[in-house]
Length: 117
Image (cartoon, rainbow, N blue to C red; front, top):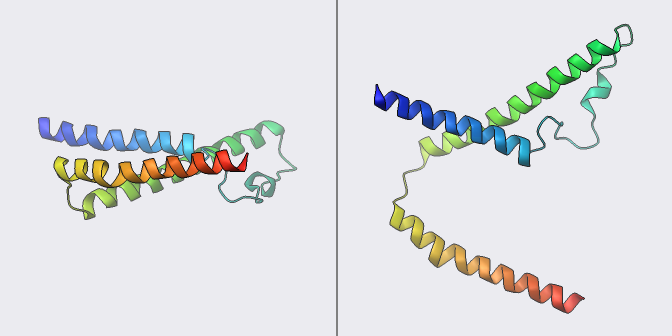
């Protein structure tokens, strides 16, 4: 039973983090395709304004859930298909590969900023 709660907590963490990523970085309830307003296509002239607002809120919730489930699907499929990385491999990746790239990016960006000013 403890193992089931562990897996349930793990997948709940994935769901909550995918919702946070969707809201903070993927635009949340806004439609992702620029220059295409989804809410302008739903013109209900025969209904009152309250129903229009409820329909637009429901569409926003559906868009948020679709984006978060897409991110959740990508993260679960990555977790299921790729092998696990040991902590020493992850530390070697961070210190020997990602840190020099980050420092080079920092030096390149500051040199461009200094020389272009």
